[in-house]
Length: 116
Image (tube, rainbow, N blue to C red):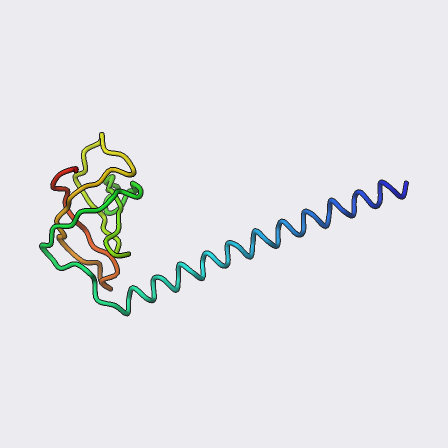
């Protein structure tokens, strides 16, 4: 009977420990994301309107209006690129033209030019 109680206690402590570590990791990730966003608001974008940039696709997302757009970064600055051909994948390198900044200049919209 004591072994059952000890085993149950160990399992309960393990569950609590894993839960606390998971919560702490999520909180840490949220803090890092917030700090990166604030830092981006306090710097000038590394690109200008009309610039042509080359970068790797890091992910695809639905941005404005539900369109599929490629996401990539130039010097840590996020570009959402429209009109990317469906056959391109994460990791492919593309060239895009910067068309507009978001309101805080922490990211920009771009249009696909070509893949590399």
